[in-house]
Length: 161
Length: 476
Ligand SMILES: Cc1cc2nc3c(=O)[nH]c(=O)nc-3n(C[C@H](O)[C@H](O)[C@H](O)COP(=O)(O)O)c2cc1C
Ligand code: SF4
Ligand code: FES
Image (tube, rainbow over all chains, first blue to last red; front, side, top):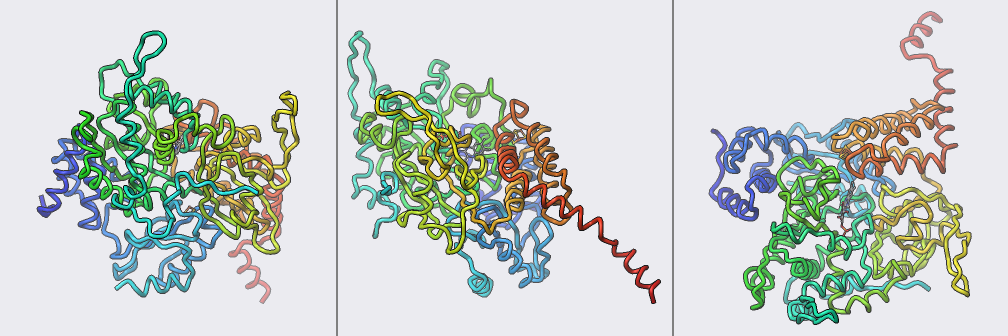
């Protein structure tokens, strides 16, 4: 298998498995751990996870294909998620998403995540991020931004090196 | 004038307050846990003995606490359904999925006062003989997950968690489990499936009531973050004292998430029912009113799934007159007290206590289309009426908002929405996706019809692009 887990990942996965009386329950957390290290989840990673958790690969694959946050292909170094749902839409989320797409040469009307040609940015519309009072909101990787004006958006992109 | 009442958020935004355990302990943190663990068995008149945990459960009943996650179900009653005779372990899960659009209250607790939640959970676990508990937090809160993990570590180090907690012989472990971007994981049985490492397909009830057949088919308690925090305060104050907060049958406080077109969106904790929608929207210590020059158009009062209220709508509310007789009082939607029962009487719900305000700049068809897109994206797909219905409603609304509508679309939408709820689906998502459509149509139908009719009219006069080209060529 070409999937090469680091020793830290091995240790983290063992720890995660110990949190549950049934190994299968660790699968979502294990996939999170893999994605955090590698940025996405390859089919070799699925095989590896299945083996670790004593499952069939399909058991892992079916969750990989269900959850929107899990990725089956590499994404940009910076994953930009703009909230699309009502409160943010009332606060200008569509204009913000359009602004990012225009700035990064992406098509604002396309559905699903889009990655720039240089692989630096992935822009995606996502559903309510539970911060509707400070609309419009967005995330870059694990970082959270509130009340994002177009000027602030430019600064955020500028800060991504 | 209505005031904020900070019970759960007492410390969260206080200057210098930090999420670490030392800060929490300085404010009397974990005193409620110590009190709970020390409750002595009580002799009852009939000679029976009530254990400490049983007394806490009784007190939670007395407090009148209702679930803060959405359904507003009595917490004490929910706990009383737990199958304690099965011989299987009992699990507790904190629902920190916070994914109902409009809601952002649990985030405040998790980020700013995580130990309050953990203390509430430990007490709830102790009261229910739980030895293993999970916090299911939505995937899009990675920082929240880190804060909770750190807090759990601190609590373990102080022996508030782990083996033989504070020398009482009680053992409890607790872990954080992250979701990965699916709204349906907030539904308690979907959440349980997700925690088990499966697709979050909700389970059918009966037989799969979590209190009987929950996590790994063991009795399981699922409670919202805010609900579990309240348990701590019930132990501190006593259930009877807690029940004095708020209004009868609507006790305690609620953190209201206010978003949309008000000057001061944000989260405000109030005694349940002690502020009206008008006060929440317009008072300067709450929403502070609409943007200048704007009129109110509509309010979604309890998260995106709750039925919309139209500005100016009137309802007949049950009230007691001076002699205690029940009378019906005509009440403007803005004068509804913000609680569980008044909103239910107005045909909607306070749900996750998230108010989305829309002023007269809003295109109501577009607003519904926005929500329908959410539901079409989030249906888990198990039940045909929900899977297909949510998609059809969305497709119809998208065409209505993209110049392709028809005058008959309003009726068509209504027909789809009416055929989803009413026991045709496994979980309440079916209702949740139809209620916005049904209520928007019931109250703003003319706008949907007008939009569709205008589209039809325009299209009837339109010449297609290729035809236009040929025409132009012929003219030259
Ligand atoms: C589609 C759907 C989504 C839900 N999302 C949440 C949620 O994000 N957070 C939550 O606490 N409850 C949510 N609920 C309610 C839960 O199923 C459950 O009733 C609640 O967690 C119970 O806790 P409580 O009694 O303390 O309110 C949702 C319900 C449905 C039907
Ligand atoms: S009602 Fe919808 S979300 Fe709920 S189980 Fe059925 S398809 Fe899934
Ligand atoms: S609608 Fe954007 S955070 Fe809730």
